[in-house]
Length: 357
Image: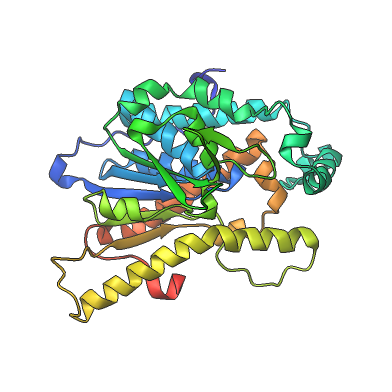
């Protein structure tokens, strides 16, 4: 499968080339969420089309880490258009790999455009098995189809030498419970897979004698690298996991899903509270702004849409579903650009206290 096989949206008409002073440089924070990460693909695809936007740092976890690594590799080897093609190729390969998985929507679900897998016998069996057996038992050979996809899409030696954008990929150290942030020069397929290693699905990934699980437990994604290691004050958060839900979950599966959402949002909420606290100190004159960095926070999300998706749809790699998520991401990114572009480099476009406190 080649990039030319991908049915991606036609690029917009080429604009006049922007000078460096016209470009607003941002950092992007990408959450994880399995197949729902295709939403972030759409957001990034749309941002890449806007030459008024420049990228300095990418902090990411799980599916977000894969998007970030592919984006950085594409930018470094082919510029904006190269990044768009690399992302499209990556998700097309994800879909192709998923074709060989037993976790498929039923024919009825496909006709009804139901993207969940609750009616799939294979999913129901896997859901039960994963609650009883560990991946060391049901997957003793540690097979992970994502490894081949990543290695087909990214030349990690080239990526490690890339300085076009700063990468910060988070994983959780199983032994210490601490976050490990891998930067450009440390990136390998193992590092990205460690960031996406859900412990109920995959064996821990060993790197330099330490074993790692999904980075979402300690940073989904981590904000502090973007604060301390990047010059841009603007952080655009791409939300995958809903922060709020209107109804209390009642089924066992929905309860577990809500627990995971709260857990995977908790580290982000803590860091955002710290940012809100520092901002308040600066605003009230309690600290010299020359000694503290005022961060400008923005968010692109689709909580209304994501709340309607079942947790099982995170394992649905059907191309129709992935491109639907991409199109929603592009739509939300366009709305955000139209409404909030002028806020970049000037102010936060969301109320951090109201959103995260």
